[in-house]
Length: 50
Image (tube, rainbow, N blue to C red; front, side):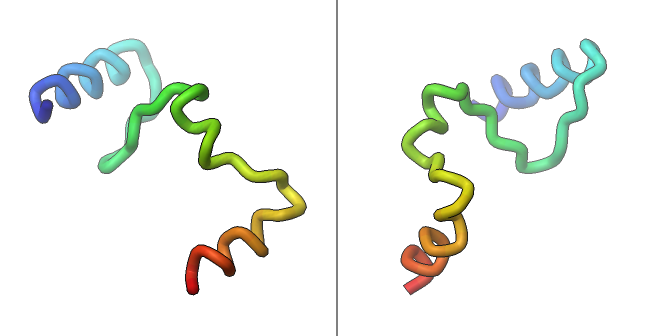
């Protein structure tokens, strides 16, 4: 898995994309369960922090 991430990072850098250490590569579909309405962000974060 580390090698695959390294290769992906290298390919993205070659394509001129900004890549940050620790960056997680997920598709929009994979991220969808984590999305909340903008007006609810603070409340959601507060609830999860408890």
